[in-house]
Amino acid sequence: MTDRNKMLDKINESSNYLKENFNSEVSSAIILGSGMGGFENSFDPIATFDYSEIPNFIKPAVQGHSGTLTFVEVEDKITAILSGRAHYYEGYDIHDLVLPTRVLATLGIKNLIVTNAAGGINANYSPGDIVAIKDHINLTGNNPLIGKNLDEFGPRFPDMTEVYNSKFRALAKEISKEYFEYKEGVYAWFTGPTYETPSEVNFAKTIGADLVGMSTVPEAIVAKHSGIDVTAFSLVTNLAAGISDSPLSHEEVIEIADKTSKTFQNFMRSFLGQINLAI
Image 1 (cartoon, helix red, strand yellow):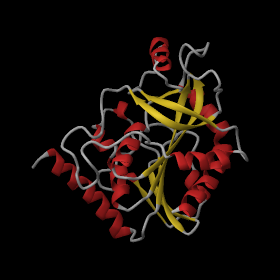
Image 2 (cartoon, one colour; image 1 turned 90 degrees about the horizontal axis):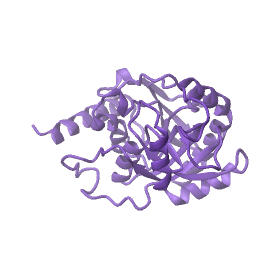
Image 3 (cartoon, one colour; image 1 turned 60 degrees about the vertical axis):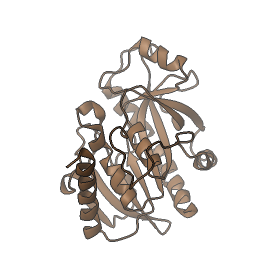
Image 4 (tube, one colour; image 1 turned 120 degrees about the horizontal axis):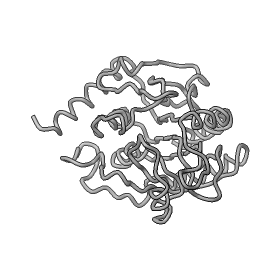
């Protein structure tokens, strides 16, 4: 059996488990990063699954990522909320990391929102800013589409001209007026778990990045491959190395995420509602 068939078997096993235990059409999904923990508690859950219950889902190990999948109703549409994600730096195969996104595609979602914590490079950013991602730069040397193509999901060579949907970014800009100053930026994906060196940050800035982080890009690539509209937001939790005068720490990330959480989540409730109305 080829690796391709093994991956399809894993996806189908996970998908069939969810369909057997939650037989409803799912319209949209959101993957929660730092600053969005507990967002699922804003809604009355229709069904909740711990990642450990779902075949082939990886339980996150990072603080603030609880590892639950919750189905809720937003504007009469079902939304899947994934509370946390495993990261590439934890040593998992990249294809296993994006399996939840593949499973969401089999559930029929039309839209995916991804959130993360990121280091700010752009001089106009400050810790606590919420930035819509307009494009990304993959600096890891890996890609979740490497290997035999899963033709059932999308083409061998998918176009990446507009990974992050411009129509929904415009919608986010309008909604944000009630919550924060809207900003957009280019996100550079590094593997981690080390924070980037000043020279790496300078390199990323030179080639056009505004943000650096350790997630989001694999899910966005796979969703785009599957024809799903993607929107992504970074919470700037720190200024990147060489931009900031102080050493970086995960405690700083958590502190800023907690301070900004209420604003981020209030905005996201409004944005998610409008996304679902647009379906």
